Each structure stands twice: as C-alpha cells, then as structure tokens.
Length: 232
Image: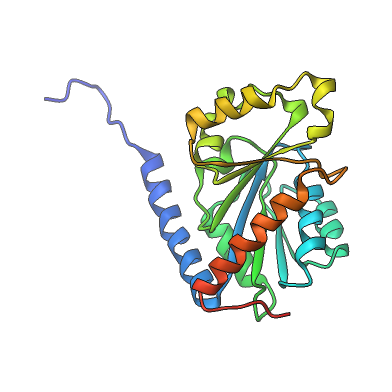
C-alpha cells in the first residue's frame, strides 16, 4: 500500500538513459571513423588550454588534432588552440555547465571531413557536472591545479573516481601553496586505485614530456585497434 500523498518520479533516470544512448552513438562514430576521443575536464583556471596547447605542439606532426571548445559563451580558448595548429569547433552551451553525449555528437558531426585522428573535447570548466555525463570518450582526462589544494578529491569525489588520468598542474608552485603531492595522490587512489597521475607544469614544461609520451602511445595503440594509423 502506498501511504505517500504524492507520486515520486525519478526524472534523472530518464536523463541518464538518453545520455547513454547518445554516448553509444558517439562510440559508434569514433570506432567507424577511427578517432581517439579525449574528454578534458577541470575547474576554471586549472590550465586546460595551456596543457592542450602543449599537447598540440608536441603531437601535431604525427596526428591531425581536432579540438571541440565548450564554453558557456566567448571563443577566446578556441582562437588560442587554433593558433597552435588544431582544427577547432566552438561549442556554446549557454546556461549548461557541462557537455553531454548529445552535444558531443553534434560537435563531432560539425567537424570537417575526414575527421582528425585525435579529437579533444575541452569541457566546460567545472569539477562537478562534467563528471556526471559519459560523452563516449576513449579517455577521461582531468586536471587538478596546485592552487586548488590537495584536499579537492575529498570535496569532489566523483570527478576523481570516473577519470582515467589526472594531471596535477602548476606543480612548480607547490611550495608556495603548501601542496602535499603524496597526500593528494593518497586521497585520489582511495577513490580510484587505477588512475594515472602525472605531476606537471604547463608553464615550465616540467613533467610534460613523460605525460605526452604516454599519451602518444595510448593514442597510437587505440587508433591501431580501430584500423586507423597516423595521417602524417
């Protein structure tokens, strides 16, 4: 017997189911076209675009690189990455604080054909909402910047749980902000024991060679499995 004076409807279940359907379509497209898709997530100011420019500079001789720049408004970051040699699509999300799979599919369909081998979605700056939506990416890459603090994994656990790799950016500023890398790693691994952790500085280049080398190998292996080699 239902003693409640009203019905309770789980509206989120329907949203998740729809997103899952579109995420499957994204994976179908990236598999068919031979694309390595990266979902790059971080807070505003963590250094997403700076890291992205380093990646483009290092890999553009081997892969055609496309970037989907997701912002609520403006095109500042899109112009920046385009200057570094990436093919860019600007995505305006309006009041939405994240990208979902349907938006991602629209972005992929808007890119010039043939599609680049490596496509990076620079998600809206946010440590909460982007973590909740599977966009069909091969790699979920997040950035935590040192000024944000080594306790962020305890405050925003889902982002650290769902990510495949984490960059700890601005590591050169750790002494200034009293950032404890060991404590940060321990907090993250309690949530996600298998996550790859890379301390880096996009400003000085510290740690970037190791991270980009690992990314190069991951992308090459994934593209090989999808039947597509590098175009250059």
